[in-house]
Amino acid sequence: MHPALWISKTGLDAQQTDISVISNNVANASTVGYKKTRAVFEDLLYQTVNQAGGVSAANTKLPNGLNIGAGTKVVATQKMFTQGNMLTTDNSLDVMIEGPGFFEIGLPDGTTAYTRNGQFTLDDTGQIVTPGAGYVVQPPITIPEDAIAITVSAEGEVSVKTPGNAENQVVGQFSVSDFINPSGLDPIGQNMYLETGASGAPIQGTASLDGLGSIRQGALETSNVNVTEELVNLIESQRIYEMNSKVISAVDQMLSYVNQQL
Image (cartoon, rainbow, N blue to C red; front, side, top):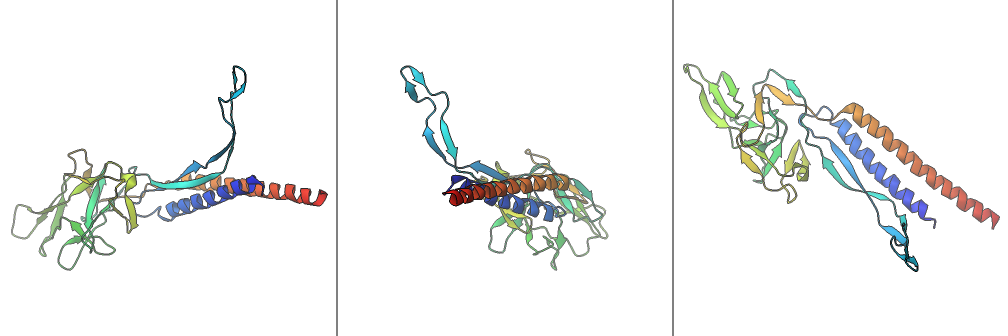
């Protein structure tokens, strides 16, 4: 079998994966706190016919080797944790982190997940929870039933104003965590990530301090997907896919010619 067929086949597989990654980015262009993903490619093993530096004659070495590649593959999908744009809202429970850091979310099994999506709401007990599944923000923050105003400071301190009290009452504190390698986090959907061995242990701290981002109330972080960039990447992947298909077609014609002539 002609090696170019298998080489081009790996190119087709790789571009199909790349297009899937791009399509997921475009689909989440409006998802709050979403971080775009990119495919990481790697060339495969080489067949070495002649080794560079090998002796070709007395006192003479080969200046170049003869190596035939075996194609390409996608070895990783990498999350890009660049800052998204700020979307101003009128909701006091909409908060965003301006800078590095993640909100902590408690999952039903007791583990802690991390998210950049600060689109929070209240449950029936007054606890601040995620809007989809209703997972509780960690540490738990409960808003009194008679609260008439909620204030979140840049450091994440949550205070409320209640009738008959001139001073605001502090009811909780948003905890912010960061990671040495955020790209190593495991995305599990619902805008959340889990710690892995590659991400390192969470580094907890106070917002605006300890190298962490500050919290902005009444704002949300939009997706960092640039739709124009993704469309350009899609065109590029499509053209590469077509070129690999052309190679397969050309090799097929070559083999067909040999069959007919011999």
